[in-house]
Length: 260
Length: 268
Image 1 (cartoon, chains in turn brown, purple):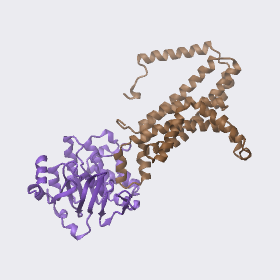
Image 2 (cartoon, each protein chain N blue to C red):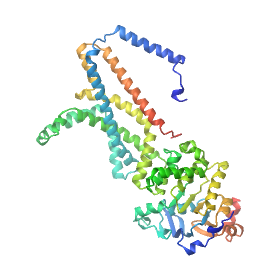
Image 3 (spheres, chains in turn yellow, blue):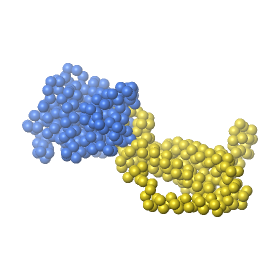
Image 4 (cartoon, rainbow over the protein chains, first blue to last red):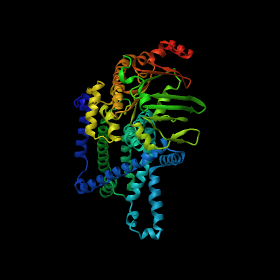
């Protein structure tokens, strides 16, 4: 049954709705929210930073994942071996470690290089943002490279052959058949991975990037409140996740392929 | 309905043959699947290639458009030989990719397993090669595709994805896709072998219709009765060589070789 055919007023849904309303009312009356107006502007900015970070690193990471997957699925060994090694290392180590190695390791190495310190790039290299973007990007690329490997390998050979038989160049076969087919096969997995990526973004707060998580931490320091800011943060991430899931569902529904 | 006017096997002698296969050999490792096959199809000829499984008939067809690369030998389409060079491992590979692509657009293949592009609608499949490969304007390609879909009886399925079609409908869509490139030669690789028995008829009807209008076709098939009806030349392949060939009536009713006799007896 498709989602739009489901009715909202089924009994179990009504019960869940009532519980949700109850929690909201309880939280509104029994907890302190007077700090909210003071931080609302910064919270919106924080959500913006989180979303921009998610968008940027997912897109860049995916652009890297395509060649990584292709190299592993169909490349010669001198391409597939490094690609596989990259994916294995990235997937085998914690993201927090990668982030800190880049920021505290690479970032501090740059500082020893006078040419870099005096270059136009230094103001950027000195800030935390590029390291956060880089770490999240290569992490996404590592996981999605593996997903794309499977997706490329799973496209039926006959469809690629049909492309060649009708005179397509290798590039046209890739652009018109192999890549779109692989992406469509990978979409359900990519949806889940993008949600995971969203929930990996708060790690950048540890290297001083000010995302929504960092704002909430600030609220907690300023107000000595524990639950209220964290509950709000949970709500924000849940709503963002909901939007992501709906967006991917819409994308998937655009090409109905029975049995993939 | 044995082939009438243009199909008479004389065209080959007058003009350049539509397809000419010269001493084609193909090895898979140590296994020699084709052991020197030569074959000529004139314009308007319908050549049926029959033979048992493993006789090399599909490989022969796939070598004609270089989906399978021959070990030696040559293929010419309308007198133009596909340029090949040694691949450094006892085989051949295309020497001129642009030429091969150009020649491939003049050949259209219909596959056993349809091989429709599953992420495109039926219409999308039919206009893909004209638009992306041949540079036909989209509107023009769509107008032509609609006529072709009508012809194969799929007008109402133009916006449907292949996965939602029956096997017979998918194969008819694949035939429309093949016709869309206005091919000089159509290659059919066991077009009904993957179909449920009750769906075979609808596909054969479309192919017979194409044969009647004088299209040049090479048809690898297991449908012996059908081959006899539509072809004007039958090639019997056994163990990688042409064991016997000739007009269908002669090949079927008076087989000369023992193997063909045995083969015809088993498939009756």
